[in-house]
Amino acid sequence: MTYAFCYHFQLEDPLIQLKEDYKWIDIFDFQWRLGIDGLSLGSILVTGFITTLVATRNSRLFYFLMLAMYSGQIGLFSSRDLLLFFIMWELELIPVYLLLSMGGHFLILVKCPSFLQLIGKIVVFYDPM
Image 1 (cartoon, rainbow, N blue to C red):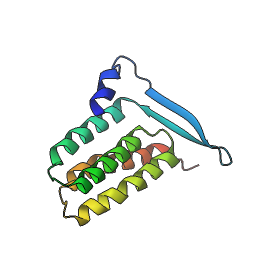
Image 2: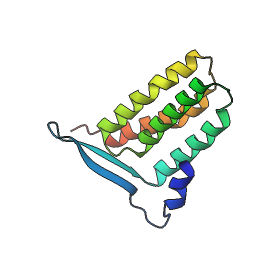
Image 3: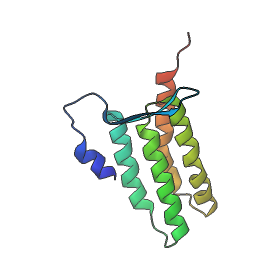
Image 4: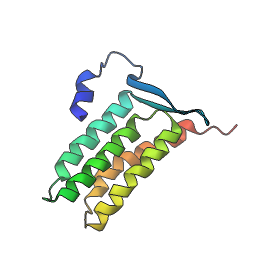
């Protein structure tokens, strides 16, 4: 999945690519907005590479939780809406907690790019006025 994003991404175009934009919850005017730019592509590639390196167990539950965590991180890095970003962040934390409870201290390597992305999005979306 990560390498498909990289294959279809055009480096010459500086705008957001591979976009999805749908109405999500009409009552509150929430939108499902996903897209990838150059910064998100780097985070997605690093996450995909590290996730494939740490998948070492031979358990179905382990692989299910790794896939759920990885899907949450892809949604986290490609979200263009702050509410969707925090929802993906929270949905990603559930498998991370369960993997850590299984003895997976290796997840610190996987969580580092998403933590840096959280700090970056908070700085970008922060408006003191």
